[in-house]
Amino acid sequence: MTDEDLVSLPKAELHVHIEGTLEPELMFDLAARNGVELPFGDVEAVKRAYRFTDLQSFLDIYYQGAAVLRTRDDFAELMAAYLRRAAADGVVHAEIFFDPQTHTHRGIGFETFMGGFRDAMEDARRNLGITSQLILCFLRHLPPEDAVATIEAAADHLEGVVAVGLDSSEVGFPPELFVGAYDRARRLGLRAVAHAGEEGPPHYIWRALDDLGVERVDHGVRCLEDPQLVERLRRERIPLTVCPLSNVALKVVDRLEDHPLPKMVDAGLFVTINSDDPAYFGGYVGDNYAAVAKTFGWDLTRMAELAANSLEASFQARSGA
Ligand code: ADE
Ligand code: ZN
Image 1: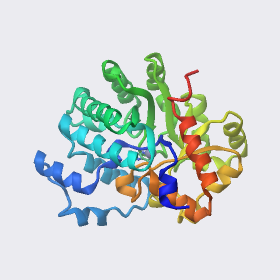
Image 2 (image 1 turned 180 degrees about the vertical axis):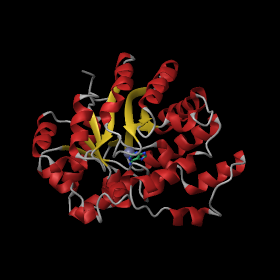
Image 3 (image 1 turned 30 degrees about the vertical axis):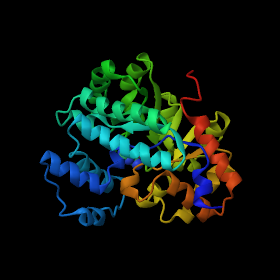
Image 4 (image 1 turned 135 degrees about the vertical axis):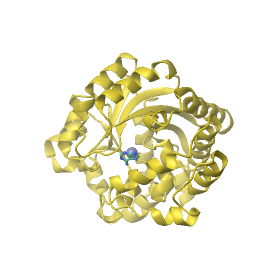
């Protein structure tokens, strides 16, 4: 099996943060264009800083990087670059996270970033044949009232948005804090996902399911610590958006060989493979497929099942409850 065989599998990407696709080269271009000072001398220095010890050590750098994004064209350029790269990996559909609070807190309005995203998404649909939708994420390290205010402010800008999500620092910020924001989002017709069980314990996954009503769990790799939870996820066929190279980069596991993915598949869980923050973790979705196939010795049939899972788990394929 070659990397081209893996590319040829039609797939969806369901767990990618658009701010996490900001390549160092584009970061420097935008910093220069917008007069933003970066704490790095050059692209090589940025890459050297990408040695993470845990989720927080990554997030500190990731939020710094996002500060170079200012204009509608900046957001369009970022989205266009991701969609080009994803299409080259055989992605036919993407459901893409964005963090509005990262931008509104810097005084950048919804119309600026949403307008830029939509310009590029529409262009990629027409010219590359890749479809995409957005998932609006609440930053869980900020107060729950801020999440409610964010969904209120977003209400007039929801074209292209299919769902809400929950991301940023997990431990200490359990899902149930965000019930109000999720209820409001549901009343606006949005669907729901949440990061849970990346660094946080299995009971955060229960709370995401029961209190937030999520239809997919982002990461969810710690579910294996709770057999009852595994049974529920299997029985209800709840998709898990697993990000193998991210889990290595953020030290959720020491090495890819230690990743629980084979156990998750053997347990009958509905898993998909995704990139998370590819510019920071050294691999787009195709690299994640290739690394998984090589490390676990999985053949094209097994990899095709995982690609088919991603299409089936997309909101495009699953009608709402
Ligand atoms: N934001 C961007 N990437 C993230 C991740 N892997 N976990 C939580 N929040 C994030
Ligand atoms: Zn993520």
